Image 1: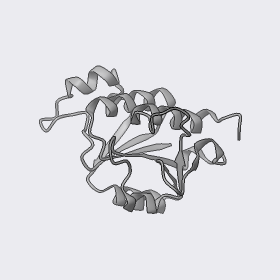
Image 2 (image 1 turned 180 degrees about the vertical axis):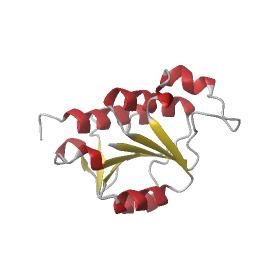
Image 3 (image 1 turned 135 degrees about the horizontal axis):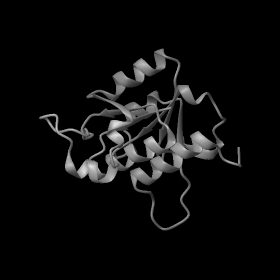
Image 4 (image 1 turned 60 degrees about the vertical axis):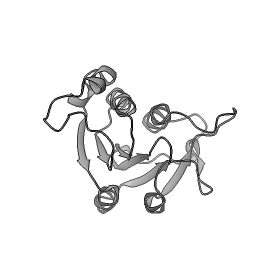
Length: 159
């Protein structure tokens, strides 16, 4: 499984997703657009990132690519199933996706305010949503990532 982060603003959210990815054995994280990298422009680990990730940037492979579309194009050539985790009129509950080869799954998570861009949503094989029962319309992106990543890794009894 690989993770794609499109235009996530918060270094804390990205660090938290790295820590979750390490815990779940994610193969690689692609950082796209404005998503902050674990290291600054001088190649030094960002202190805010390290505080949250607890060193996961050293154990999870990662790559920066300005274009999320280019990453998706490359992954599709490698026969990855692309799942966008986003609220959308075309989305289905995340737990209704059939199990697939985890080595060929890519999960996309987007910006804290605007979500995943429409251009990227169009390229996904499916759009998955985490059903919400409360008054708030969404979860923090790092929490949503944890739910989706562990569902794909360990399954869900509703499948």
